[in-house]
Image (cartoon, rainbow, N blue to C red; front, side):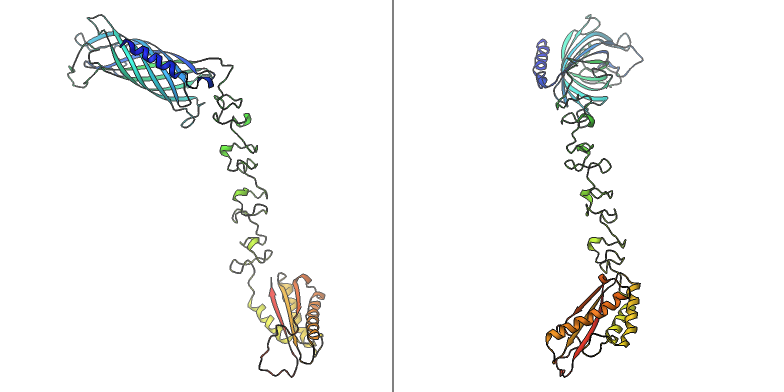
Length: 442
């Protein structure tokens, strides 16, 4: 067994070279008080603070491997024994050494590496020697397997307080000078095990002026919120690619400069909806319409609204519904507006219905009136027909403009003999055919 400690030390020195060139202060040393507890053939005193106590001192040497693992060498010297009366007791000096692999919870995945509280687990292989008066205790060396749970609390950048409990499985059954189970309660069987509690302080060794900075951004890992990625001091060591004041890890648009209010994303139209969520990123709109404008507030976005400035319905493509009164008046005007023969002057009988049409357009300023006229006469050429039909459409348009209707809301079209209406092919064309049609658009 005397070679076991040499093997542990050799392994520890080999492992200590891993990544040590990249770490400015990879070593730490811990000093602790030790309380030793027994479990074996005579019984146990685990977590027993009332009866005889057995104390000692401990030394821990640890080396940083990576953010998740450390390699540790634990050394301790303590009294070890048990007292349950004159016939059931023993006392030895316990010298223990173990090489352990340490799993750290503050590895950047579970807790931040700079976390104030840092739990850890340890497991390894150890060597334990017992020295005693042959009448009171055992003198032998054993192999042990320590399983440890501990927590560190940082006091400063270089100092931490730690609490650790290590349950040690052994390969021997006579460290208490007894073999086999003689416990009358039959509570303990098998080899003798022991539990060591430690309370102490650990100190980081090395040149603290050269602070640990794995990502090389000039911010020590202790103060770096993103110790594995180079970043900015103002971002606590985290990157901000688009320099908008939001860390890339929190920024849905890390390559587009935005605002803190928008979580790091741009809002070009400043409507409170980030561009990547805005269906109309250059036109301010509402959240309900996914950032698109709705000028007439009818629930139909301007892009799909055929009447964007007049409230309508989705079923009517955003336009108001044309009422039955309007349709009736248009049919009436189609029949009652007439012109003098081969003239663009409308007859006086047409004035009344044109005034009704004028009133309708004033009551519905969003209406666009289309005036279509048609003329067909065998005795005249197409040029005459086209000119006459256009003149008649223009006369009605001019009448409406003169009486206050916006010219932009009026369209006058003369079709001549093209697209004639009210024409039956079987009819003998012995006279001029003419017609007029009013239509409403938006």
